[in-house]
Image (cartoon, rainbow, N blue to C red; front, side, top):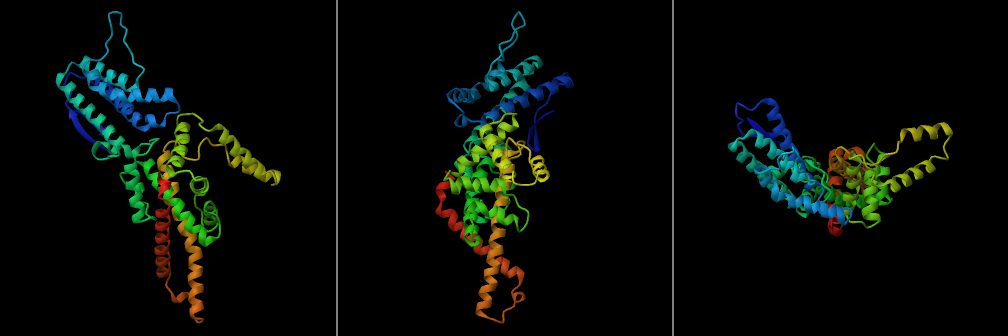
Length: 370
């Protein structure tokens, strides 16, 4: 029995003949996994994210090869009389032919037709994921780092955050992680503006302020707010640019060498005034990084930073609002004692006030989501 793997789920696809040995079954499974990887590779790097016209044409050609999968499985390129095989440069096309050659050697019509149906189901799942529909088999897209975002998926993530800006539900939701990052970046910026108003600092500066209260992520949320609120860059572009650098790093490439060099130069200049031993220690503890994100899981890592950033804004807002609440109560009643109002009541009131203000701010700058 051969089973197709879908994340943490499997389902039977076809029963192999008793004549099929283990090595043949393993070869078939490997070829099918290669085909699936090629198909979802097109989803991860669509033509819309191409670096230039040549790259765009190559990606468009890969996408066009979806229509050839079934034909390649049924009639693959086979060795000629001299033992030579036509091999395609197209990853999707060649992956399908590789599966077809294994099936040709097995000579099992029932297995062939079952796997043609299975391959078409996988193709359809990728197509639906491209449209923002992550139901059924297309749920695999929720585990991938795509360098583009579906407006439908952004809307889903945006509604989840609107319901509760402090929720971390997006981390377990069936939502494309890159799209979730776009929505989270929008709400992070709104939360930073609200927190900055009470803290008396810039929106990008709230994370360093919050870090003085307790340890929180600073670098990534600060950069995102600087781009969106400071430079006026739309959330979609800010997120995709950061993910592109991280995905490139995961492939062993440096996508922004000038930027990395400039950032390192600024850091080295900032520590020049320190004593030599302290300066050396800081330089050693801060190695040069090709990306600010985990290149093994960039979109999920970015999402975690953004949601933690929203929580940091709430932390800072609560610190200042709590002091204002106590002072206001003392002004109304000189005999007021801080302990007279329960901690939970104060925190609940402040959280409600914060989320209402963040919703208002997010609604006022909906254009950031583009």
